[in-house]
Amino acid sequence: KNTIDKLRKKAQSLNILHNQLPSLLQGKDLITLGLSPSKEFSRILLAGYEAQMKEEFKTVEEAKIWLKNYVL
Image (cartoon, rainbow, N blue to C red; front, side):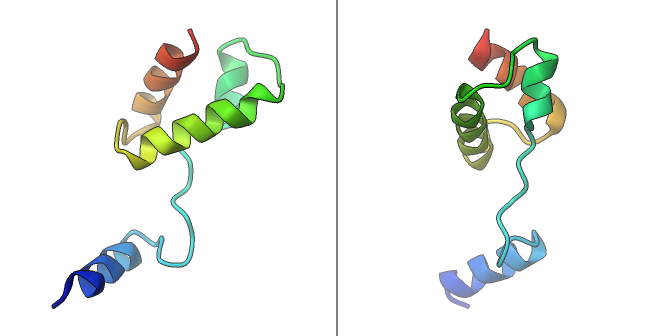
């Protein structure tokens, strides 16, 4: 099989062929750290999602550790 077929099968197995991978970090996680909702939330959550896509973390627990290091 060629690479594209392999990628398509992998995306299907992860249920992300037609949907993006759900973010492990949510706005509530920022609020839990003591941050107030602001325009910065979007930037922080986008940075978190990009880190998730780069596999800097793979679980919610790891995501929260990443977030603390990113924000604090």
